[in-house]
Image (cartoon, rainbow, N blue to C red; front, side):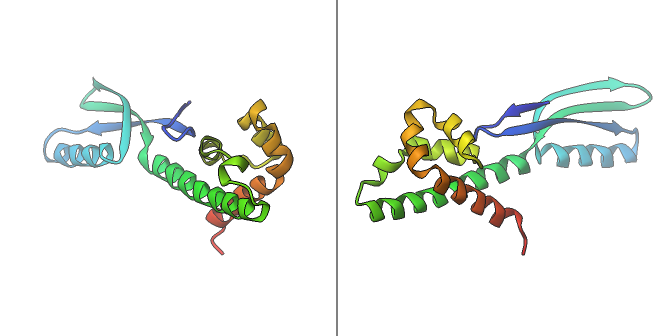
Length: 151
């Protein structure tokens, strides 16, 4: 199961169960639950009692959300760098090559093929894809490779 995050990516919703024991052990269990809850975005939480409390937490991991935002920001910068250089080479305004809205869509979706780029930009982006699609896809692929390849 997944849902769209604020950056347009898909985040995986997960479920985790905590058992809260009675006595001194229960305080440790509650502390562990509290620490976990600070690190996730809770979607739903239910409790049940069966020889001790059980807490069911449906959540999305905030670390994944933060990573998605960082990748989108890095891709926005990379595509902007390409757009500035391409505009300089062609003597055109940068926004004539790729609008800010199109750059934001590319950063959110990270297309790695010209087909994906064309679908993302729609009919109004046909000219962009025809003239610069291969270059834009290369920028995306290079950035994703650089971010995921530790060497």
